[in-house]
Length: 314
Ligand code: SF4
Image (cartoon, rainbow, N blue to C red):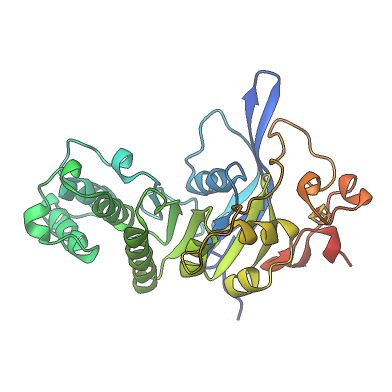
């Protein structure tokens, strides 16, 4: 029996007006997410990861020009931000209200989206504070954000995001502002919360190690398109696209000393204002052939496990 997808994104293109033309953030992004699935969007800065997340959340800037379709088949209606979709931002300090106590900030979406009294909402907020690891929750519920550490603030931001019981949690680099030990704790917390609540998770990260720790499936984005997708173990263990291979080779690991010189992907991503002809990775690709610069590679494989590269074209 096939599962009705929670989210279906087809040929999504997002651009912004610029002085001399348009800045392309997404140039044709396809993505299907099942209920309860955990997916990581991986790539360099400017690949389109955060734009994809904002588009899914309905939080794109009003100036954004959007083409393509974005449906939520399992919901059967447009999602309500906060109720159906929770969002965790990169910087927990700027995403929290600095002058409001944390229990009130968690209770607000509960009160807004559920038909409960403030008293009940605050009691649920304190229970959520406890669930995300803030102790003693009752005593600290009245504190404002600056009385918490960076890791604790991200725990509170997660509590706010899940307070109304969303089916989908979106997280944009939720650990990149934290130290390594705290990063691992926050990823473990996200992992346990999405499992126990049956939420789907889409997490944006530039770090393959973060994706490996939490995602069932990985999508690798480059220049506004997905260039490779597949189960995490396959993508990380047997990457196909030359960009994925370069990205993994350039990733540093705590398990081994960093090589000298530090690995990097030569060249730079394409100009987001430029019209792209052929494969967008061709100027940086060690395997590029003349036809790569002329013809854009199509998708080879299934929608959930495949690659966009002429090396794998039939
Ligand atoms: Fe490299 Fe060609 Fe594949 Fe692009 S299509 S990644 S240039 S081999």
